[in-house]
Image 1 (cartoon, helix red, strand yellow):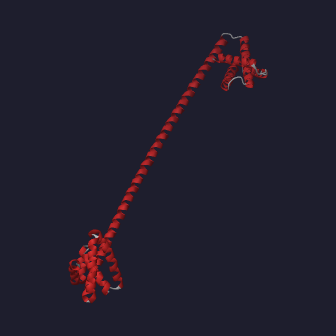
Image 2 (tube, one colour; image 1 turned 180 degrees about the vertical axis):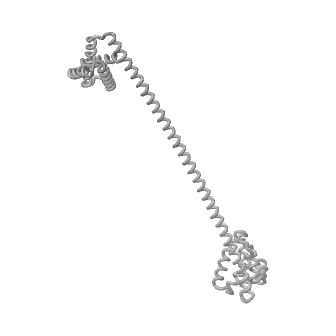
Image 3 (cartoon, helix red, strand yellow; image 1 turned 90 degrees about the horizontal axis):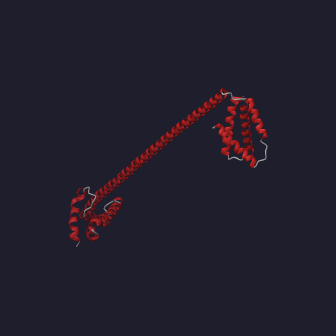
Length: 300
């Protein structure tokens, strides 16, 4: 049995020598079944004859183990078992007479094994380099994609912030314009009422408004001022009405001052404040409400 598997290969080992073995191995990382037969037979001879130094001996042993795994994956375990069995029988037969012939066979087998191991290592390194390069390429692609995503996100955030700022600025300008228009309208209305008041005063003077009418105006203002101070002490009116009452009193005070003089109007105001001593109750409430209603009619 071993002859069918091994004898032709062994004959080749014996004849090829060291140089021929190196040429036979080539640079292929895939070991053929014939090449494995050469390596396995050479290893069986080496085990018995020890033609190699210790370093190469151990290296050949390691290569044979790796070669067995490599070839078994491609040719199946059954064929490998037959080759190993035939190689062992060949070693027993030829190893009985160690000499130049077996030495050349071992060196040829070592050359085949060494060349295959080198090709295998180179192929492994190429594959690893390819995997590393592919890994780097994917990492770089991922990094660039992430940078692009970050860039787009930042640009989107920047544009959103810009739009918000522009909207806030537009709202601010609109509010300022509305406030300016409101103040202008209020000023115009105030100017119009002031002009109407002055015109009315001039017309009254032209019509001969007498001292009795003047006194009645001051007396009426005094009663209204007293009503205001009563509310200031008794708190009959809500805050907004009380504030409106004070504004109307101040407005009429200024108008009367222009007509009758500051001294006269101030004396009326002091007397009204001094007389606002009544006990808070229904009576003071009626006085306050009457005073507010009266000054509203006067101002309008």
